[in-house]
Image 1 (cartoon, protein in one colour):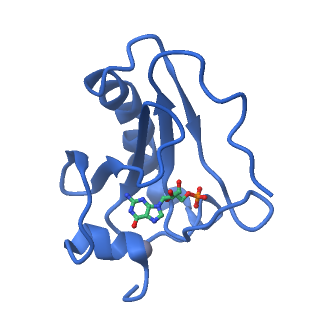
Image 2: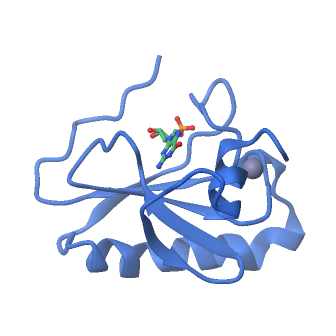
Image 3: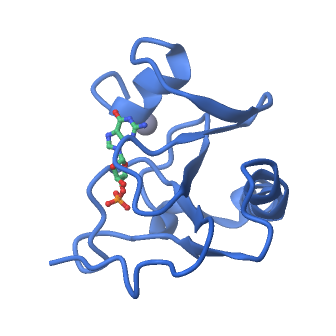
Length: 116
Ligand code: 5GP
Ligand code: ZN
């Protein structure tokens, strides 16, 4: 997807502050953090939304979720965190490249990451 900003981040065409990377997954700090720790975990391959994921993506999605604890801990969020996946228009998704928000840090977290 040539005009997808997260694909551009994967390719290094847009800079990002990386928190984790392997051959399938990239994690980087959100540009507008909602809390002291706010990392986005994305698949390197373009998948527009969680609703576009299928049976072939199970291992990848599991890997992304299984990384959340490690990434949160490495960023200093030691007492838990919130994971959010906004999906589609109703879900308030702004960037149409699947991403898992990992939001943590010292309490209190924002009560809710509100979306209009
Ligand atoms: P969504 O609303 O789609 O669930 O979340 C998109 C997130 O991506 C937002 O929290 C927004 O701050 C973040 N974001 C949008 N553009 C960029 C960017 O160019 N770089 C980074 N690091 N984060 C971005
Ligand atoms: Zn993309």
